[in-house]
Image (cartoon, rainbow, N blue to C red):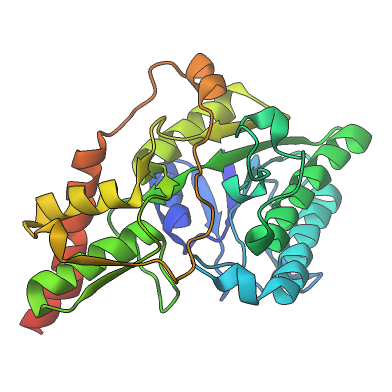
Length: 309
């Protein structure tokens, strides 16, 4: 099998590439350094008479936190260009491939159940509206090319991914990595821990290895479909903070919650009814174990190794 991956240098891209390589799959892994997907013909360089069986489109232009709030225009232009060009290349050059894309829980309308049937219904949260709509448009593009030309696709919507080997590369990290780093920074440097919001906003995490295995299992079973992939449980930010403090051996009472700061959606709990019927025995890493592995890696990478240097 020949597989093409965009966004291969990102957190998900690196784990997916590793999993495929270990399975003996031949991959072509692209980062932004290899091709500028905002340019129309950038992907023609990678045909090389190669016909791909799968295209995993992971590349996107976004960051966590309030990034989407302050970059709606650029997010629309850049993500629409990238998505249009991958869809165009898929149709004109790689129509035999199945295109697998990553959606976002942000695309669900605020206040509606996060079930697959609602993905294109209602209006997403205003602060995340543009990014959410570019992801909806990507799905509509896949569905449209399937309807007219018979191309095959799959879109999956993850809850927040976490695990070891996450590099923010100067970007605002997702909340769980930011929270772990703040608590570790308190442990080593006695830096104040300030968390945005009152801590009652709820989030759902899925361990990166669990997600990749579920993604590849769904790819073997489904086509022309949309599926949530979550862990099936949610916790408040306070609960996550208390778990992390317990693992790191820091008192949770030292955390300050700043209610004046940006908090985003109050709740993001994906319905897992569909995937649980399809993959009833899928791998699920217990949250405390996954947090422990993530914390151990971050502590070694950011604090212990840095101190030794």
